[in-house]
Amino acid sequence: MSRQRLGRIKAAFRLWARRCGRADSGSISPLFALLLIPLAGGLGMGVEASNWYLTQRAMQNAADTAAIAAATNNSGATNSNGCTVVGDFCNEAKAAAASYGYTDGTSNVTVTPTYMTSGCPGSLSECYKVTIVKNIPLELLQAVGYNGTASVTVSGAHAQQLVAVSIARPKIPVDYCSIALGAGNSFTIDGGPNVNLAGCDLFSDGNLKCNGANSDTGVPFGEAVGTSKCGATQVSGQPKLSDPFSALSSKIPTLAGCSSPSQTNPTIITTAPTSNLQICGPAKLGNNINITTSKIELIVYDGSLDLAGHTLSTSGNGSVTIIFGTSGTDNATAQYPVDSVGGGTIDIAAPGSGSGPFSGVAIMQDNTITDSGSRLDLTLKGNQNTNYNLKIQGLIYFPNGNFDIAGAIDLHTGGLSCIGIIAQTILVNGTGSIFANDPQGDTAGCPAAGLTLPTVPNSGANLALVQ
Image (tube, rainbow, N blue to C red; front, side, top):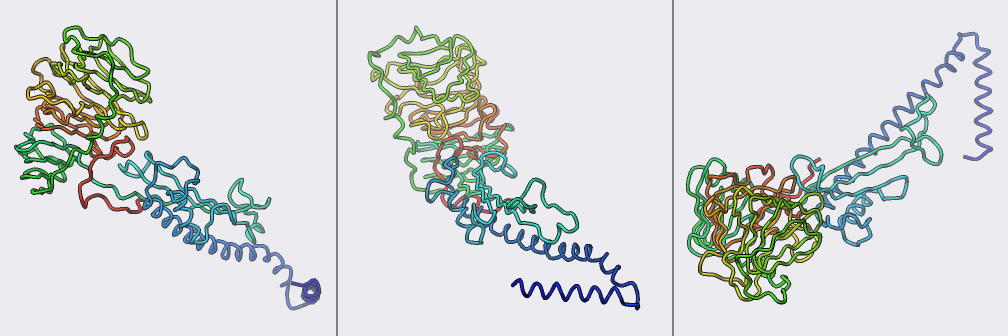
């Protein structure tokens, strides 16, 4: 508006005010003057509040679209890069918001995408959150003394802050938590009241059998190359599933000078290792061992690991992979954890994502070791002084061994919901506690735990907004 035109408007207003002041038809002008401020405030409240409402609606639509874009991209591992990696979820979310006119860093707008593995709604183990914030300068509402959101200003003036938040989950695949690689009746579950296989999908390269009323409790998918008689969805005649972890054994380092070690003189472990520990021949715990260092490889060549009634655990940032390797002589009588006293516990977390070749692997045997006897067979049912508790976050890999579970096997204390079992044959007896403390499903936390298990084809919770 030009100064000349503004001057004419002011002059006309003054003339109108003088005429009103001289009018003898009533005291309208003083009354109107008193009403100007509340009228302006009411008008401002209606106009500005309506604008905020419409803006908030548009921001929420933008946040919803951005969260879906982030979850579709699903590259949460790059969460800490500050949106510097082209094509990751962060850039995808910001681009989606910008398409609605909300560009991060412009027009008093900030767009913050976040990948979360804790704090997600419900029992989700991962989700994507997008927060859009816009600061809008106040106009007429200041006339009635409203100063907007506390401590929020735009160019030094009071402003109102609007916030829109949306959370989406990525498509979550259903993974096999237990796989039997053998032919014949290689996977059998005999039911019992303490068997809880909620969220645990099973696969057998032979037949999959469940015996007993409670034997398949919670199993969503039971699939087999032969016949499947287990799970809510039973699929027979599947293609053979090759060992998904066959490359692991080539990553085990060799140990020079280890040849036919004595099986009667174990190495006693009395302190927690702070670096990789390689032992020739059997090993034995001298006391409770708690590992607080991350990414430890505890490798026992040609021997067993005797708990001797003690506890081997990890806590804090500690993680360990227990490896039973071979020097090439294969003279060991057992190559798995044992307990010569009974009552011991293995309560460990495997190294997490990005920890090297053994990420997500808790206990494993070298797949080059073969045996027609029982020295590769892990039996947890109280006989032969091998009764101990297993609490695991990660994979148990016994590709040429038989895994007979009738004792207790559960999740690592305070750990993620992630257990995987790969063995030649698997027999689960329900006399013990099997996965009983797992509220989410046995593989729900595996992506965060660094373990990638084979996925059940055409399964999984679909990508969706959850908040």
